[in-house]
Image 1: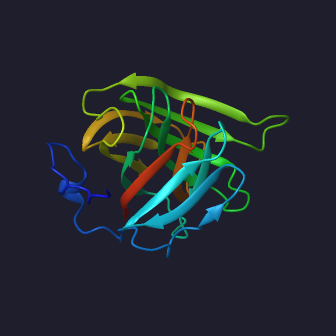
Image 2: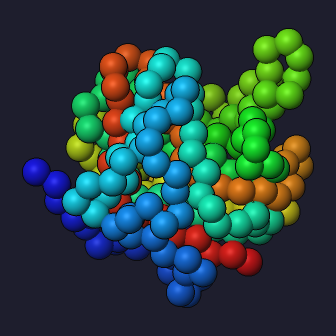
Length: 208
């Protein structure tokens, strides 16, 4: 049975406390900002006021919003795994330079075990693309681990300074200028679970 996402509880340092009204709020009642159906790597559908993002392969796949492009922003996604295990993961795909093909950008996410990671992907590098991990999987008690646990994943992008938040708690930050602006979206990666699915309840964007 689908349930609504709980009202966000703000902790000290939560960006939501100081940013005011979002530039965009998408409660995922419909597909206005998202492509639906299946592609090679993912499937997207809408049900009961949520977007369902599913992994169709064991490679990471993503979908972009029609909103953007953006340079400086705070982007936050409220979502939860259905069935999941271990390093199954999902999160934010950001500063994607081109919509077509959407093969470059930052991937900032969490896994089912309660860990976060910050990486980048450049699919234009021959022969097989270049994956660079800036922050490897790291455990943090602010992340609610396991299936059916709702987490808020946020990325604050200010020039080359990139800061990751989960549930309003700062996880880590780094300085990197590989991708200076671009589009935003979501990604999912199934390491252990067939048809891994994430229920996305709400997306908020503060353009700065």
